[in-house]
Image 1 (spheres, rainbow, N blue to C red):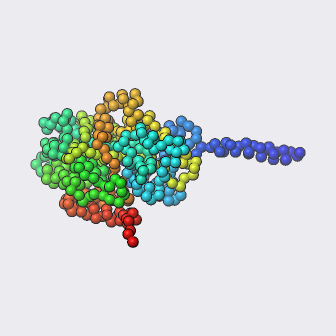
Image 2: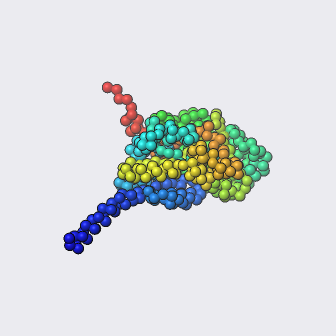
Image 3: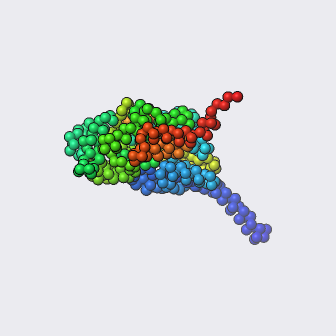
Length: 439
């Protein structure tokens, strides 16, 4: 046999020997994630992904920061449309209905069946209040990752100064209005300190309007159907008028739209004594608030009730089988009790797994930071987060009108009539598609 032949055979043998190594190469996937509240969350998420990559050799995850919740939805859908769907996305928990209807996200039921488990068994360790937003039409489409409820934050020193008992924060709307009057400070016509403040930017405002409507005994949307919202109703009108009165009648809340960053800044500076804000901001407030503060339930009018907020892990359609398996493996690691517990302690979001609170680290943390337990105490009163066809646009239809009311351009009743009209028009294609057409 010639040298060339022997070399050729040797090269062929080497190349064939290399085939199993190629098959065992890492699967590379992208993970899109938002940072919807203040703090160092983007840096911590990047650290978590790096930790995961270093813990195993099968999957390499590239973390891609995508802005806020709405931006993340748009960017993930754009990437999928361009043929490069992200394997895993940390998505606003109320986008599942819309994303399922548009065909963007996949059911996670096949992954459960492959592991010979059931949806019920998988969800058993997650707080019951989170189940509704994780499912669409009876199937699991997302895994809760970080979750929130609104909380009432208040300045303890201001309460004492105004003759209010900080161990008895406002429990009702009437008590909130009364406390806000006592807390508001004026120098002639100039307001030096407002008694109450809340975010009124996009996304946040819709969530807080749901909180107020729920606490007024109402419903924000049809939880079983993606084409129905209840904007022009007595219960939401009561919520809108409550805000309108705080601004224009009692003058304990500033006129106009304040974004979340402006709300926390005013609270830190002592320019506002009470604020409605997500528990997801709790660590940020704890780190930056120089005066003593505390947190409490969202005040009620008719009942205690709050909407769930936060984000869940979803998987986009259009992936290879290897990418799906890699994405699911990453999701299971991210949603483990230990990972979720650490993320909760870092951010202020409550951990969606009950078992996270059974760890020694979490028990020690709660003992040192009892304010972190208030959101958990509210969970028995928590309801699903607003989710419809065209969720963002339908939500903005309300937010635009409430912002107009807060700017003094419309009265509450007219704002809600206009919001309902806009929302119905946006949902019309879905309503017509799902309507029973009789012959």
